[in-house]
Length: 147
Image (cartoon, rainbow, N blue to C red):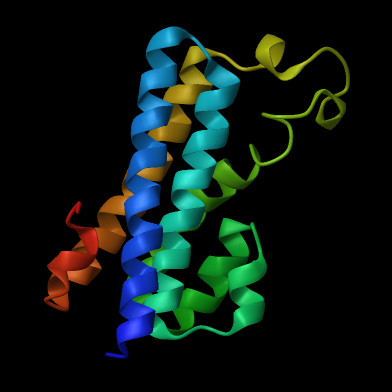
């Protein structure tokens, strides 16, 4: 395993974990649109972690779409195929959870509720869990271990 790819995988996975923790913290405060965005970010960063690890092309690493990342990553890692539903859920939050003009009227805080936020967190958790298990199966536990 090339050292630079492993180091990038570690950096991205660590931030994915912190974004998920921030999402959980915002859930307690009732900031549901923020929860959904942070959950999307957590899933995105976890997937970028695995894409760095397996040596994906730069073009794949520049997208923000979890579905696009999974299309690339699942070619090499079949276990990622079971994450498409979670990726679709989280991709829906990338713009509307942050920008008032991403919605037909109002602003994100008006549209997002607790159940939606909880579902987003569960989707991100599943992505992180599958990726963490993959790293463990490769004896790459240090990628997922917090510094």
